[in-house]
Amino acid sequence: MGDNIVNFFAGQPPLNRLSFQRHSSETLNKHRSDPKAQFVLYRDFKPLIKKGEEARLLFLSLEDVRDKLGPEYSTAPEGTTDKLQLKLYESARLPYTSSALVFLGIDDRSDPTTNASSATDHLNPTGIPYFALDAVGSEWDFIIEQRGGEWGDARASATALKAWEAGIYAQGRALVDWNVRNKFCPACGSRTYSLWGGWKRNCTSALEPPKEGKEPCFSTKGLHNFAYPRTDPVIIMGILDSTGEKMLLGRQKSWPKGMYSCLAGFIEPGESFEDAVRREVLEEAGIEVGPVRYSSSQPWPYPANLMVGCFGRARDGQTIRLDLDNELEDAQWFSRKLLASLVSSASGSTYTREDYKKLENQNLSDQQTSAALVPSEKKDGEAVETEGEKGITRVPPETAIAGQLVRLWAKGDIDLVSKL
Ligand SMILES: [Zn+2]
Image (cartoon, helix red, strand yellow):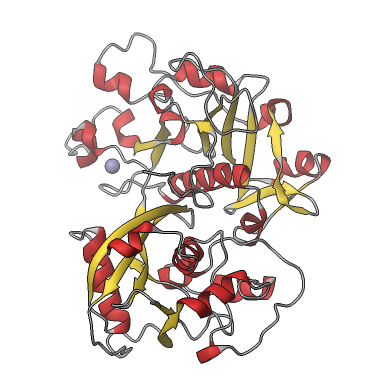
């Protein structure tokens, strides 16, 4: 079978998430008060990093954060025996106004050079607990200054992180974001509160006694109406021509000069991965796609996407057209030789801070933009821009799944392609 492809942000989270412990306030409070506990902080979804060292998250210790953490995870009022009532308080963060505090898991490795769990007791593994925290308010400023921290940039900082820390960053960011953006019940508009150490939310009206003459909130009528964190899937694809020797890449007008990337788009309700690949390629480039194969995936925490990387093979004898959805400025078939030379050249996937800014200033719901430049190694200085064949001078970096798809094919490292 061979090894799976591990993309940036994925597979690296070395944390044992212990999702089966989330319902236990007692266990989560134990982790929270563990002197070894580490806290990764966010403000406005930006990570706390070491000042002047964009490549490192600054983790705070329990000692640093203890007096600002707020109340412990709640348990049900004494004497509660009703099962549904008990469920309403499982590791709840009350009052609901408390800032988001998410239990990420435990680093249970005994050997930090490997990501493999070394737990012998899988029910109660030991190690370092990690939490993500929304650090709202000026009361945090003093300790952050004292510990030599500053707020990094949500994307550019992530580009520079070590893979291990990037995994924790991505997990924490997605969860803090979800908690912060879902403060109101979609059924009745009341405030929501957090349960399960930040992995579940519920309508606060469920905690109050029923009001006479008022229908209870629809969401409180069944357990199935608790809200859970979202993951929104986006397909991103390396489409090959019928000979398998050319790959279809496109660009948007606003992208940095010379940059082309894989086509991408949201998977819509009622679509499989394969359906979405075929629809998007047809809509964006007018090309019909036959066989499609899954390659690998990448979590993308801006705010909650999962990039689903695929290869596909176009049907014979077609012409590219961009006038169906007019999303791309250009799309072309590029030879394996050209793409191989770009991925192996120094400037072929180098992006400056200015380039990132160009991409970040886009509409963030635009997956074509979002997917095009997933984090890369940050390099100083301007990228060398030389006009290449058909205007392409750059492809996405290795840390982007789009960059992975291009490299896998260009270097001939993939079996899937020959079987398409
Ligand atoms: Zn409600």
